[in-house]
Length: 406
Figure 1 (cartoon, helix red, strand yellow):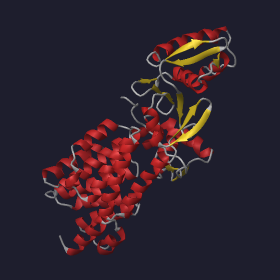
Figure 2: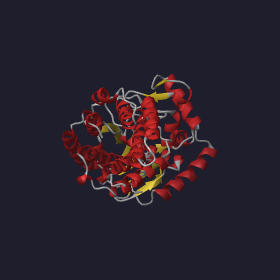
Figure 3: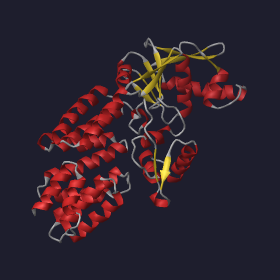
Figure 4: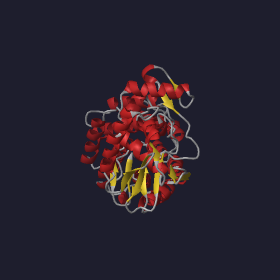
């Protein structure tokens, strides 16, 4: 490898794409094309970067399988950053195996980290943890150690483990300083800022207050009975009952929890759970059935007693009841949470990440655009969506994740 290629590669490793382009911008050999593609990706010119990397992969000879694998690895990273979540991950797996077979453990580890970050976007936390378990960051360059700790922190934040997340971000910041890559340090600082922002709202005894992720973790460990409207579960420090697939039961539980220790009128419960205007005999009968079902679900935590005007929640042992609500309760809040990362998402990628139909996602984006909450550019398949991060609160609890206790 000649000195100009070596110097360009070193500049890219330090996050200096312009310095790399100065050295290889006019060259058309395979190695130069690959470096130019990586530099263009760092500058945000993703389509041009893809074209250059594919040209480089074609230009490398049949015996240069490791070089072609590195081109695939770079293209996979572009797909992740540009939120092209439909990009074929089988190609990344093949490239990783090739790199491992040739002893390139650093780039093979980078491939695993890309896979883990994609799993984290989809909320597949167990899979992301399993991917990390096969990696030893101690023997990797500082930049990859920082990425490792960023993923660890992301998993911890999704699992509402703020203390673990802070420790991981501290290690990530130290590794990023050693790497000397400004963009990586900025990403870590952004993640750390989310830990100090409002992550949820707690409604207790008729009062409401904002909570950081640390305070949410403390609430979960307390003796309180928590009705979690971020994860659609009812929980205390020891037991979690999911009502994510029982929306009527959860609506009733939330109404009873928000009113505790007072009761809730039947008319209010009918309006909350069934959207009925008044509790006629038909609605009363339906309400009795659903309250009976909710009693069975909440048996580990509390009783639901009938009162003269409605029903009341009576915890067995908990001294307090709290409803944990999202920091921003609005329609399509999950879409806004993903878009708030500042990246440009396609409707297809959003649909994949949230597990919904693309047409449903397109209608949601159109509604948000009409309300001036999101913005788009491009047309057809090239259309992308984003929104500026909403200052003052984190989106951690709005993002896809397994239910606590799963």
